[in-house]
Image (cartoon, rainbow, N blue to C red; front, side, top):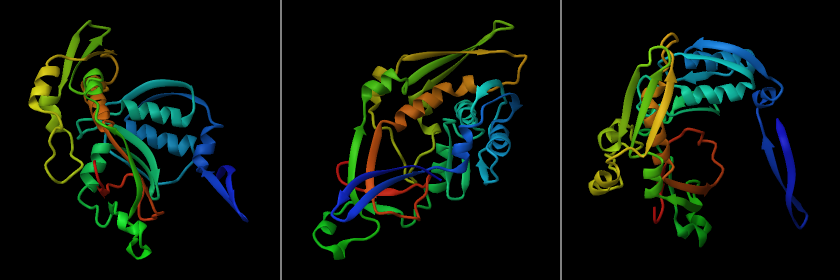
Length: 278
């Protein structure tokens, strides 16, 4: 469905438009608001929302989670609940448990970024893009894998790595019934290799061991999670430090590219870039 269309410019006898299109489920989300108590695995909750609230029969590909989503949601829209489930979900396999919910041309996906790295990093195929100034001088040098322009808005911030606990953190879990306190820690020097690499080649930390030892010797953040042992375990307390650190480390280095329209590229693909100064 076309949600908004607007004229963005004119050129002689031509008129340029930007069309913003949304799915049927996106529009249904804004007319649906509900209250419900859930007590099921995260992937089953997502499945239930898609079928019962968003009324879609599109395929859902889900990664297995551990723990139970045991929560009452009150007057929430379906996509708001999906956002909540995505944040609380814990992967059975991948350390970061950084889940995403998105739609591609094959259907909906509920998966961790690490799972995408693991399953797609070795099959980039011809999805390799080059920034080559030669195509700007002769049209015969152009091909569909040319990078027309690129920008690197972020190239690392050591302050944020420390401040946002990408080096070290501690999570304490407090059981309100028994008063028992459990402690879980994240330490980049120890846990870096537990994250899935995006490349098939060996990946090393950008920082030196001196930096890690000097600024990662104590936790920058201390998280507190309140638990109730009478309810199903969520495992969220064990992974909150990993989630936060992995998210911060991903946001450290970013590149934006402009390419030709390409129907072979879809959300979640792993591609390779050959550009300068990055």
